[in-house]
Image 1 (spheres, rainbow, N blue to C red):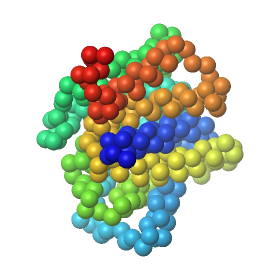
Image 2: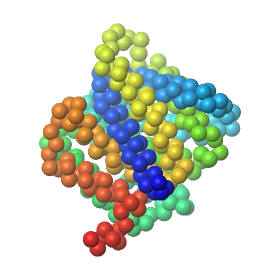
Image 3: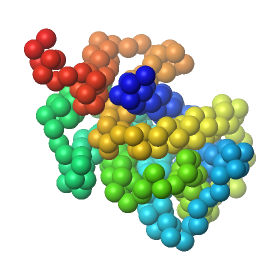
Image 4: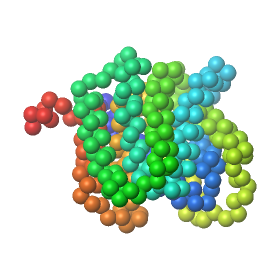
Length: 301
C-alpha cells in the first residue's frame, strides 16, 4: 500500500476513534463532573498504554529533560480541550460538539504557515479548508437558524478547537517524535494530564459526592478511555511522525461525519439534506487538502 493511501486510512481510523467521544461524554457527564470525567478518561488510557509498553519491554524516558514540553502538550492537547468539551456538553448536544471540533483546521493551517517553515499554505490546503468550512456550515446551519445552541457552550467549544490547533503546532515544533520509542509520548502525556486533572477536580469539584452512576455511563467512560483516547493517541502519533500538521488537523473535518452517523445508528436520528451535503463537502475538503484529490484535475472535471 502506498504511503498516501496508508496515511489516509490512518486518518479515517483516527476520526472513527474520536467520533464516538462526544456521545460518550454526553452520557457520562450526567453522572460524573467534567474534570473528574476527563481525569478518569486519562487514567484508563495511560494505564492501557503503560501496560502495552511493559509487555513490549519498552522503558519510559527520564522525565526531567522533557517535562516542560510534555506538560504543555498534555494540557493543550488533552486536559484542557477534553474538559471544556465535558463542560460544554452539559448544555450542548453531542452532535453539535462533534461538528464544532471541525473548527480546528481553520486555526491549524494558518498557524502552521507562520510557525512551521515546512508546512506553508498551498492552493490545495486553502481550497480544502474552504470547502471543508462550507460543509461544516451546512451541518451546523439548522442550529444557527433555530438558535438552539448555548452561547457559553459554543465559546467553550471554540476554545477547545483552538487548543487542538495549538497542540498540533507545539508537538511538531518542540517534540521530536522519532527520538522516543513508540507509545511513550502519549503514555507520559496522558499520565501528566491525569495528575493535573485529579488535583483540579479535588480543588474545584467534589468527585466523592457521586453516589450513583449508570451502566451506560460506566461503558461511556471505558469507551472514552479505550477508544477515544488510548487508540486515538496511538493513531495520532503515527500520523505526526509521517505527515504534516495541516494534514492531521483535517481529521476534525471528518469527526462530525462519524458523529452524525452514530446519531443515526444509536439515537435513531434522521438526517436532513444539509447533513448529507455537509458530510460530502467535508470529505471532499479533506481529500483536496491532503492531495488525495488533485486540485487542478478536480477543477477541470
